[in-house]
Image (cartoon, rainbow, N blue to C red; front, side):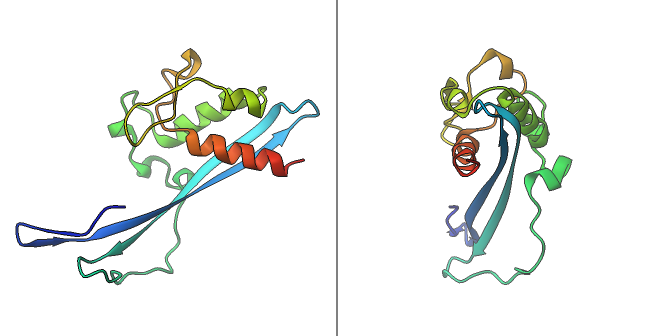
Length: 147
């Protein structure tokens, strides 16, 4: 959550974020991942310093991170020069042929407060710097429903 505030006599809107993580998974008879797709839809509800919702078009389509593609804008902030869709594709590829338990046991590291679950494996060092904690949780849930 980003608080609304008044700073130097200027009012700044706050935002209440809601992120929805999506996972679709296909498992083989041995429980290994044959196919997996991840995506995220982010909704930011803005509010004023008075605590009122900011007028806006709340009926407009909300694009997922995959739908946004290059427009998501991660490439310029990425230490590895990769856009979000490239990083999630690399993580998806890493998951193929592994069990859900193996993905859950994957070593991770804390990159910063916003990224407490970044893969810490050589295979992903140059391709994935996003936090994958929510994607692993979604994978576990999707796999449990696939049975």
